[in-house]
Length: 394
Image (tube, rainbow, N blue to C red):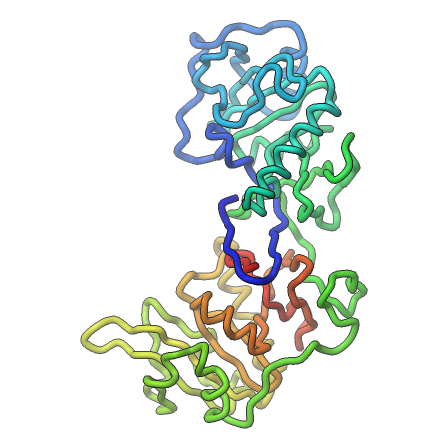
């Protein structure tokens, strides 16, 4: 929830994870173990006990306590008695998952949801535009649960508990339930996701504007809004010179130099460039010598864009297979009509987007918020976009 970088385009991400301002709800693997049973004040009847009995049908909820000083009780922004109509608070432990579940019992569920929505909107107005997209606020009948571990949340959303999302950028992927809550502008869903991909799987294919998703501003119904083009490597070097400064001073088309990569800078194109549909290739930056390499990027002229994107898709999916993330040192492939640039520098990519290059994104479940470009690629299962979830710009 701490991703916020500003430029000129409005950016939000759409996923659900732990409400980060709740210091005891980070879902960290290093979190302190649940308090021992001896520290808990036994709660055997009342709304908290009813909530415990319900949740224990789906996950572990042991050592229920209503003691304000229970070390498992969340601090920070966790709703306190008297806030948002909350009359009772408690906490129990999901020992198999090494986490806890905080519980709030509101007298008026609509007032609770309205209070939470206002809090989210205040945080957004204060500059935290992604606040509330990552929510562990699970609303049930008569109580609200705040699990600290993703696996606990995943077990609970298999019940009637639903994640409350009040950030306007929130969305529910296809295949998951969505219903309106008691206040306008929020949503209730059984989709729970985390930034590390350990939440609910999002198996949607990347959105294809040619398949009917044409409501977002900036998405063409057919064709493209325009892509960068160059007549050769020399023209491409001149085109990107204002963005890739290293191309002005350190530039080479020598095959041995172009084949150089380092631990910090790895190209998107591997092996014989001709097999990727590339007709010309150059290296910008300072290859490793006495010191480490500096600011490496690659320029390509492309004779077969479909072949390039097909090979790049396979490489990208192979990289994502292990942990769902691309290697930080791997370059992203930004394409134009007949040219491409490979770079792992987010600031450089921002400049290239202004030159009408677009990033080939083949990650399952990817979507772009309104305000970003999203166009059809040459291969199924990929899109061209100027939106990077890890580096949103405004």
